[in-house]
Image 1 (cartoon, rainbow, N blue to C red):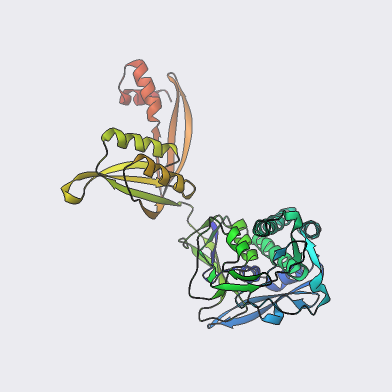
Image 2: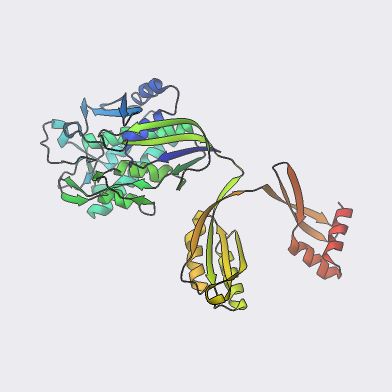
Length: 422
């Protein structure tokens, strides 16, 4: 399976993601020319090769009317912040925050509302799919700003340079993702930084409120680096494209890209993108376990049924010896990520455990199909499995049981009769 893994150990911003993905394609100069001709008003994009901590990568420079957003303050990332109609500005911020700069450029006082941004995006020379992606990402940002400021999305306006800069970053990432066309996008837990950020509204905590809102339900962490590592634009792009968040899977990499931020730290300030292949046969599941020694057999059976009802792949028990020489039961559940939280809740509700252990497992599975076979005794489902040089088939037990009960036969006799009539 074609897989893209994004290592966000130093956060993420639109320009860093653009640069990292750009390094994964062969014709980088051709892409820069293409993105500069899609029709973003007054915007030009350049790339340059930079080295951080001995690692060579790409840095992206976005200019609006010849001005790089945040250039006066040497910001590491650049992104827009929304504000309401009172024009209380909240401009771009990143690893090194000082938003009290004077607005010497006349265009700094122009602002774009969501309606204007949608109009611009709808007229970009992009495929319908890429335009939809661009608007979806920008709407995540606008919704976050709307929530933070407590006003409708229609009342959110963006500082013009920041808004156009964000459109460029978002359009570039969306177009690159369309060209790369990964079947899955796995993102590491996102390092958001720590401390505070200074902006026009005052001193705000890191992650910034809009970023924190976008990153709901996504694994994030802080650390020893003071400042903002993940911007709203970066957060929205990750949320839109990620199919899952977690550790790097077992994969054969075919290309690696480094997208560099503007500032230097002890650690390389970059997003790393890795493109490659993961084995289609390998399946990632979660194993949830708990020990109990004070439940009856009936209670355990009932708990297993309820856990199966909420999406468990497998539920089974193992006899174990527990503390004080008590015999007990190890309750084991295999599930997928999307069912994990509900299963944990169900395990706590229907068992006496006070703690559940979790392990991430990689399974090797055969390809499986179900075929319905017509027989003189009715339809019988047959499960066929193949892969790794083996094939096997098995009739569905419930169908065999039904026929055996109706005919007064043993199950093995029913199987033999079905085979004879095939």
